[in-house]
Amino acid sequence: MSLAFLHAHDCSEAQTDSVWGVSWARNDAVVSISADGSLKQWASSTGEPYLPPNATAEYQTPSPHTLGLVSLSVSSDGRRALYNSLEGLTSLWNVETGRMEGTFESFMREEGMGNAEAAWSVSLNPSGSTYASAGSHGNLTIRSAEAETFGQKISTVFSGRNKFGMCCSFSPDGRRIALSSEIGHVFILDVESNTFVNTFTSHAMSVRSVAWSPDSSLLMSASEDKRLILYDVRASSGNAGGAVATFSGHSSWVLCADISPDGRYGLSGSADKSIKVWDIAARAAVSTVQDTGEVWSVSWRPIAPAVGSVGAFVSGGEDGVVKWWRGAGTGA
Image (cartoon, rainbow, N blue to C red; front, side):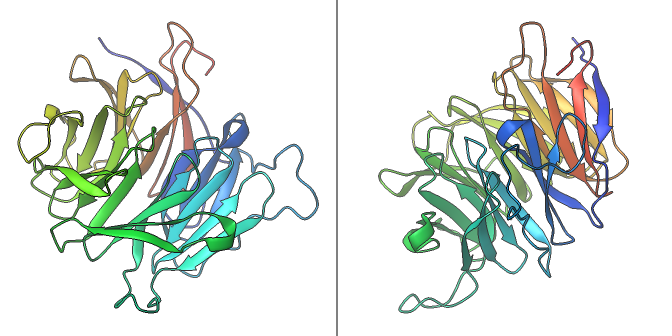
């Protein structure tokens, strides 16, 4: 089986440097972050800059940061965007009101906490009360996402490897956090026990991205070894087992991944300037879209596709352009 995805449209104004993150937000809008330090919000129907219907004159999009923005996590209800800068400034912005709800300088030493660990990747808990962060020390840190205590450390767990944490991501049910590293390992933290319960070592190089299935039972990882690997995180603890499929076909680093809201398809973007759609059950690529540059971020539309439809997704990459794609024969 093969599928066709059509290029629907681009954002109306390219960002001045690479788009390093894209994610769907409230009212079917899309939030993007860029190496130029800016966060922007777009109307998915037109690609124009987006303002919520009830936005007041005081509504503000965050001012551009002096350094690039490297990590983006939008809450499950699409109302808040958590993002992180190159040096580790973590910010929480309300996409509906335009208010900044919290900022935390993770690169600053905390009293009584020893050396600082600047955040690189951040992820909001689906409950919205906490967020996870990872960086250079191989730790996974959980902090408060509440306005009054934003950034306050709740716990830190060492992965057992003093290697750079490339990506962290809460599962949709909020019960687990996946952490990937520069040496190709993927760790699974059980939130209730605050311990790592699985370590997967299937990749030979850095794991750039991880993506959860909607039911939180599967995890997909994207690596510089040109492969994606699918894990069943319900497997028993330990280093053995867990990996249930390998997806090969990209000719260079795989930089990003996502899983569709119905759990049927995987999505990946690569330094080979292509986007691939994978049939998870068939373990095969069913569509390849050629782009103009490295593809740094992809995100499926979170709305479940209509019967007979494969849905739609958005991408961002080296050319600074946010792009919308839809399955052929659908109006998604």
